[in-house]
Image 1: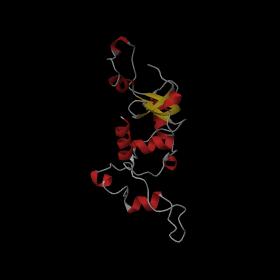
Image 2: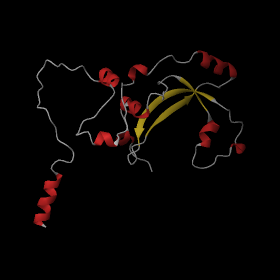
Image 3: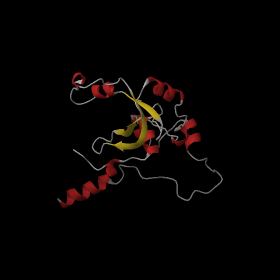
Image 4: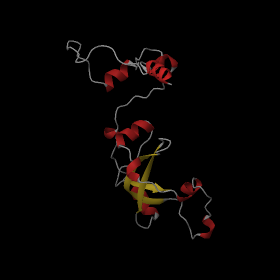
Length: 173
């Protein structure tokens, strides 16, 4: 099934926030190694390399494109990386590639984010949501306590008003 990649493309910063800080993606135009046997181990069907001429253990490639995607049904995030093989991959080329690794960092593009698994106490907190002080101070803009708020205090609970609609439907039905 081939689905339109436009529908499941995800903003790079949102994608990185979803996968967490431990994931690093290679920048476009950087050199990486492709491992054919490792790729084959994750294929849906088994791959028999014995019929092919010598398959190298690794292939030096240049990253041509990176697409940040999500599955439309499960919201699972993943990436597609387009690789272009470089040269003939002899040992000298591989050594030079390792020495000349790209020093570009995506750290400046990664958003500051905070993830929290909601607990029962979060649900019973009258609509409030607690975050650690460090996160509040580093992620959100500072509050100006001297300024008058543009809105009134209070809010709407997710369950407020639903009981009234149910009662009206029961009276009609």
